[in-house]
Length: 118
Image 1 (tube, rainbow, N blue to C red):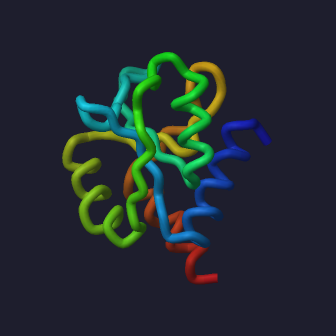
Image 2: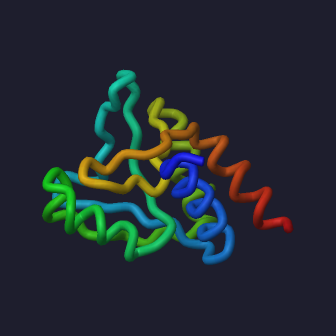
């Protein structure tokens, strides 16, 4: 299993358990960089410490602050908005360049809801 797979699995488990998704924001809003395949993804993390690690260690995200988003709010507002805007969800990006899996908003919701029912 790749490190991105491990981080994605942790994202689903941890968000299902905590009911909170973490984004990062600065004065310009939430980042949504374009990936190597040309698609844009907005990164989210399963814990404040994971988000802080990226903010502290990735120069592109210096100055950003972690923002907690309740899962219910994420489902009601963020999932439809991300889908409408054609954005993917970056799950638990990590490393020196903040990389990881980019998943459709609908698939993120399905994956977490499946774990929430067990």
